Length: 385
Image 1 (cartoon, helix red, strand yellow):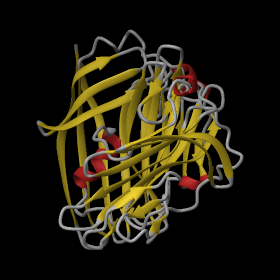
Image 2 (tube, helix red, strand yellow):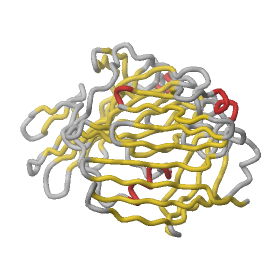
Image 3 (spheres, helix red, strand yellow):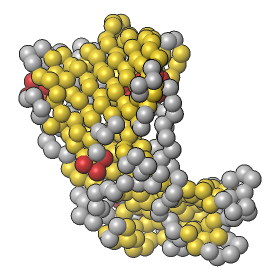
Image 4 (cartoon, one colour):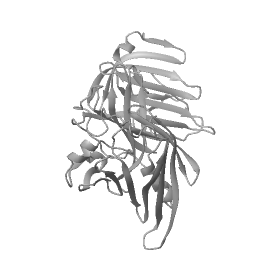
């Protein structure tokens, strides 16, 4: 499943570092855009949304296997469980195809957690997917690649072509089912576009019960021309830098009951630049926090195209998704600086850029959930080659 890898943008990671409490448990998903009339085509500028759901079937000894039509069936009782849905954790992953060519694919992934207790969607993290032009992780494969795969039904492995209906839309599809040793996984792809329609897994849990997980497409659309991070390359002026140093100040606690404040050094090291992607290791107070990745020119990256920044007006909307409850606007524009603010029901992240060089100068993160809140401000300190 695509949510939950460890590459995150620092602007989001700071909230976790300074927060004094864990995020609340997430429940079933809020409403999402309809798939029925979604624009689906693998191309540069395509935006795809997928929802991930999980649940646990707790009966001791239950063993779920897929039948030929993809329903999960208890092998002992023949009880049928639906493939989609879940009552445990939930999240949405949004993929923007930043580059698509015959030899290279770059996708900018943003992940959100869903919480129906507070009816909120929380920005959780980012990562970058890269492909060789033939496949993109589990999300997509060139339709021609499925031509040579024959339908088959052998022990522990099954391939079947079928009509698959999801959210009122019927796809000509291919389903691949495989035994993974401690359960089964099945992936269904649209034969026309090559996109993953749905992937589901059933894994036996030690001590009894089965864990169910589903990852399925919910919507798709084409982003407008000039959208930040699409077909953008890093400038040669910054690609020689190997280290960025930042200073982070933050606080967190229970509203009206005091808080804890502090500051720590942040560092990006081992920075590696390709044409469109930056990969680095993040350190907080000298301790490694794992890898981070950025797509060139995307909102929140260490550099944005000055031409784009200079085109913005005060309060101009840059991006918005009503189903995900967020907007990104140019909250402040003057002759020297541009601030872009991401905001939703319980979060605000503001990125301040140099209007002339495109360099990220600082970012500020505010987050609240119920009676808890946290804040962090990160300022650029230095960089070295």
